[in-house]
Length: 156
Ligand code: NI
Image (tube, rainbow, N blue to C red):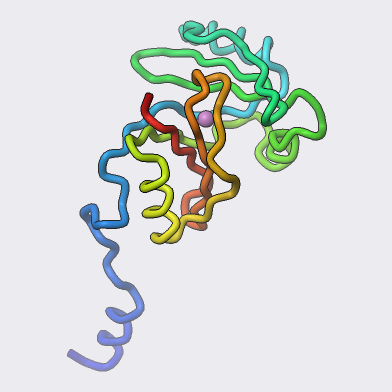
């Protein structure tokens, strides 16, 4: 093997193709979170695509947002709309506009999974807290520098 090829190989390590100890085996996709500026208009637009409302709009006073859940073909989406400019979602809205911005994963052990993911390069951007729109189950948001934001939700 010549020197040039050795350098190329060294600079492009093959990513792991299977789950390792720090990965999320045991995670189950729960929903895709959409930021929307106008909740009623967004719901109407999803209804026109054939979605149905699975959980009607509730106000989350912890995060200052309105949330509803809709479903289609076995997929669940969560619509999140900031209630005012003090909401964390208002800041996200400036960055993302109307768009999907996180995938939420259910886990049996939220604290253990949070520790495993943060040890594996994810950064928690808040502390686990109850989600009124999901029966008070705890959620936490994390960011990966390589794939953006995810949410963990404890299994009920
Ligand atoms: Ni969510």
